[in-house]
Length: 129
Image 1 (tube, rainbow, N blue to C red):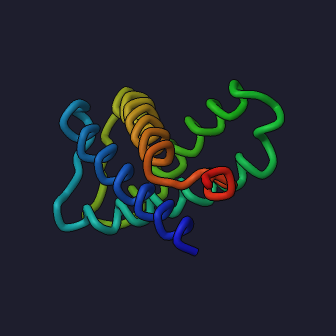
Image 2: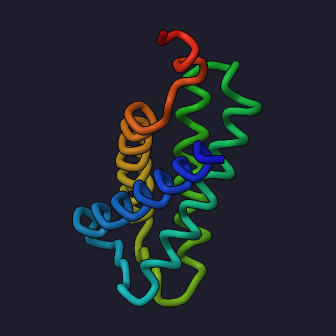
């Protein structure tokens, strides 16, 4: 249960940072303060669900499939989050492409680093004596 709560916190934090950094780097991407929390929660939930699906069904197909699934998940999360009013607004196709790639890279990197350093490894406690 603690592991799940840490994972949820990681996804929320990486979504917040990913969306914020994207808003700084992509001109056609606007993140409204009023809808920031909703956008972060929606984005994190979509990412969490897609992460579970990818780990459950696609991981055995290799890292390339996992990477493609991650880009699709980032796009889907942006699309769903943009449907909520006063959250995310992306005005051009170029904005969608760059926003998807930047959010995917930032959230992926932050999530990987946070999971690596914050989540305990399974069986680690049993090896220490």
